[in-house]
Image (cartoon, rainbow, N blue to C red; front, side, top):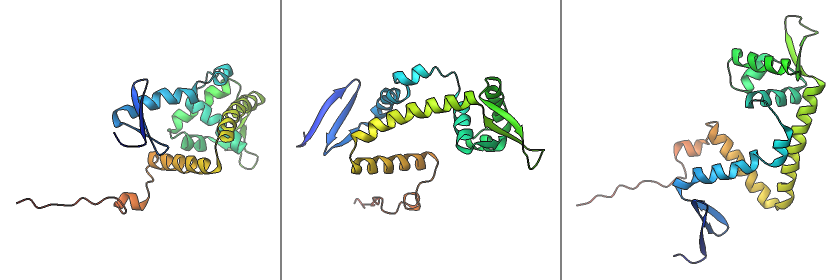
Length: 183
């Protein structure tokens, strides 16, 4: 056993504290992720929102809110779905009274999408709940911890989007594999 390393069992995976860094065994990362993610996705306030929207519908609502009014292709690009899927998403939001379709004032061929009062209310409740949790975490962290989390989050997003840095793609700065001749 190494000095200054504490091991303990947390449900079904091992967490190793070494200088403040949590290291998970490779086989247990998935279990840790699943057990931890529910704390983000299922706190009581989220359940109280009683949202019956799909992920794509929520993303579309938040995108329309961010842009005030947009066109269908912007939603399709944002949710990374074909136009036919985006059309179905928007149609459900229109039927639910969250989004309305309007003709563009400058080009009558273009249909724009905007939030209704009901849509704005739902988005406001989502944002308010999210900001509550972000504030709780933010208030508990030091400036250094916030910077580290931001860097890690940005790195994870870049990895998931396939935007690893050139250094990482070329292996620069990575340990080299040495070939050892054995006689």
